[in-house]
Image 1 (cartoon, rainbow, N blue to C red):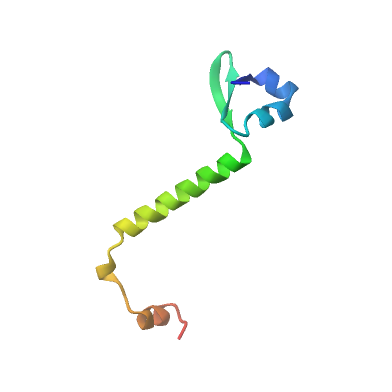
Image 2 (image 1 turned 45 degrees about the vertical axis):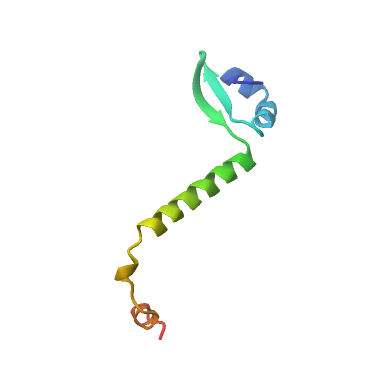
Length: 80
């Protein structure tokens, strides 16, 4: 199954979900893609990739010269 119509999705949602486990499955309405179904594992990998990317960017852009000592940070947070 390379794509599925909305009617086919309504008729057999389990089949569409099964077909989306390895690759995104386009959902079409009048031969135009309206949405995609992706499997759980692929979704989780995408989320992890995005989170890692955001974290990497934050580390790259951090200005460590503006840092503060651990003692000052603990005082600011009230953790003395």
